[in-house]
Image (cartoon, rainbow, N blue to C red; front, side):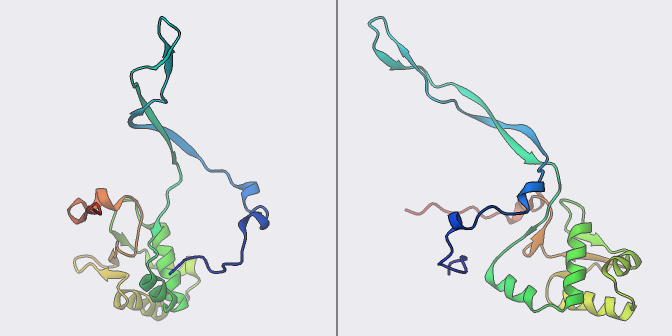
Length: 175
């Protein structure tokens, strides 16, 4: 199924996104290995063009400086998140903002979470956490109070391939 919601929308007629005017993306450039340099040509003694040997050059890429988390967009995940209560969704989103990059667990400072999410009653908070656990977003860590495992199949802050190298499945090339 296509992700485009309205087939009659022509992007060239939409104009400019009004949020871009103030957008500043901070990046840092890093070398990420070598790639072939653009092909160069020379002239031989008879002024005939020939290709020079391929040279390698640093592949410089820009990485965003700001941290971010990824929410994976399979249809079943979209449907599941749409079924969460408002408070559970609030706690889930708050959790993604507070988790450390590359970690698959988080410690919830309950007072801070309740304050920042506008939750006044501890029972409301506990109901939201229980809902997230039952729905497969979080799982309580039995060793520590208010520490939860996050489900990295749903969302993750960092690189999952580095965090879980044993879970990496390489695609087989189609023949």
